[in-house]
Image 1 (cartoon, rainbow, N blue to C red):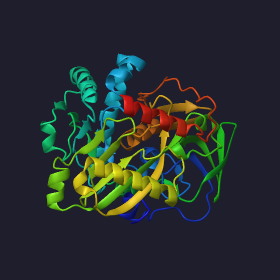
Image 2 (cartoon, rainbow, N blue to C red; image 1 turned 60 degrees about the vertical axis):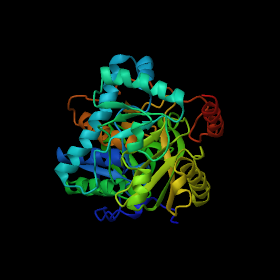
Image 3 (tube, one colour; image 1 turned 90 degrees about the vertical axis):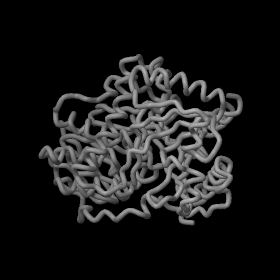
Image 4 (spheres, helix red, strand yellow; image 1 turned 120 degrees about the vertical axis):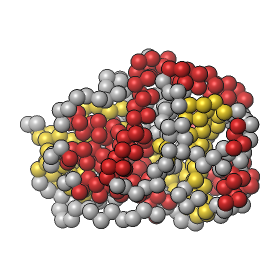
Length: 424
């Protein structure tokens, strides 16, 4: 078993990283070489801006290369809950932003010729308990009537054609998609450099100063200055940006990938070949990879650390969860096990805008694979002075009380959600 991301291990290496010291002056400095930062860099460079991307590790090293490979439309919340909290108008706008995000990725892949196994598969939200199906059905009725007619309610009998495990029904979101995340992020980096952006790897930002309308960024490889800065670092935001560190909660997320399944195993396990998410608070998500592995993830532990030891513990928990859902795969070989950090916000709504002299987009709360490319391009347009399309503009973002970068409270959160899953 390899303790590394399947997406990293099965993607080509990015060969376009800038060499030599980090120096010079740029129109825009983008901090973070994931989906948000690279899509913004591409958009800016296409418009003629001089752009530099500063990535602390390798492009796609963080959440962009450590996720479950889903591009699900819709919200992280139930639509009804979002409408109650945000109001109908913003809830609909945010729901449609996720729809638009999948369209944006599909259009970008087509336009730039990125080979990343993109496929409109559809997503099923699986009811793990009978009362969960009742809630899913109520949510479906509102979604289907008000914002997304490309949805369907599936009975437990319908699900026999989708998943080889008993659930109590599901909601199908037909617009949802999937892709190979590693190939996409490398392709996005290559596209950004082809349009003129400079991408520096191993260039962690250690200092940020702003004076006279100009930013200076010190990195481990030198310093640059820029007229504008976009922070696109999510759960890996450096401590120099304290405003975001007090509002982002870095939560561990863990994933395993099996050996490739046989045709018979696919027919017995994932005949629908869609992206799947269970309805538990501490639930699981899964899909088939391009080479027919079952990629199975979840919040196995709430630890904000990820190393081989913690990944191995989480992998054992996930394998037990996999066996509980798919007993027919209880003894299957696990080829990959990895973990990463998810940039959660207190209310699990993402944020994007302008604060303390810098632009930002983050807080995707486990749903960034689809939204990040779209928001990166929207924030690039805002920097360029184009019409403001930010669906999150004006959404208040209070700091998390007692939180200054290290989420000491995560074990308590985990205990709370486990209790909810027991009683609800």
